[in-house]
Length: 250
Image (tube, rainbow, N blue to C red; front, side, top):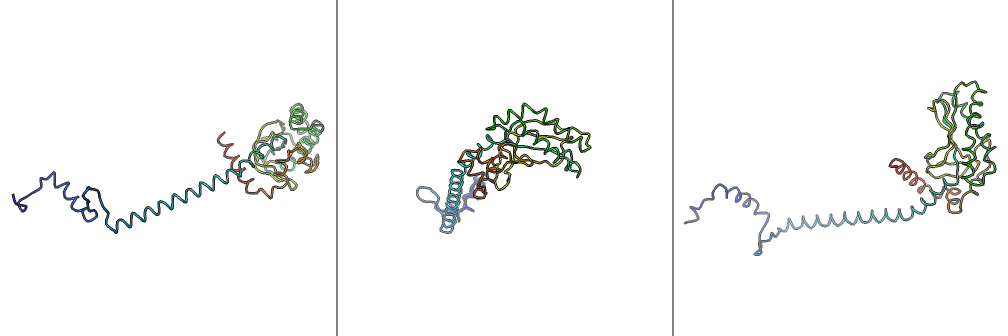
């Protein structure tokens, strides 16, 4: 049979035509393995280079993250111990009206004066927490008396709870973000702006001591962070993000 008389069956034509059309892109060796033309080889080589670059970039990023984590974790571990030595105060106003915000400060002062009567001899957070928890009724009474003296019919409620706080600065020191044992006073509906400070060691007016009272209550590793927060601005922000994420996932 002559080649001029050969014809592909329809089923083979479906396969043969794409193969013929694709021939300019590939040549086949004796081992029937595809060999790329020079132009295609250059393209593949370029792609491999880009892949190597991306792999190297990822490795560098991973290395940077691991190095940052290695330096951050000791800081985070020390910072997480700070809440074990501090009792926070959180006063929530009834609303954001000028009158409600003003009386919030009157309630704050009354609660601080009353609290100082009970935890004044406390040497650590455990003792201060016990003293405050034991006298929640008298703290609530002091808050309500301040409201009545200023002509407000609403009531306040004092309770001790665990609350998340972002990093806060007080008198040149900073308390790292974290979950702190907190004396929380809610006035009325508790829908206004809040006020927060430190009950123990005393750092709030009018029952305030000074920054040394707070620093002396902390171990040396934590004292360095609290006393020199300007040296740890990046770490404090990272810790805040970390604590917020952990609080969301809890």
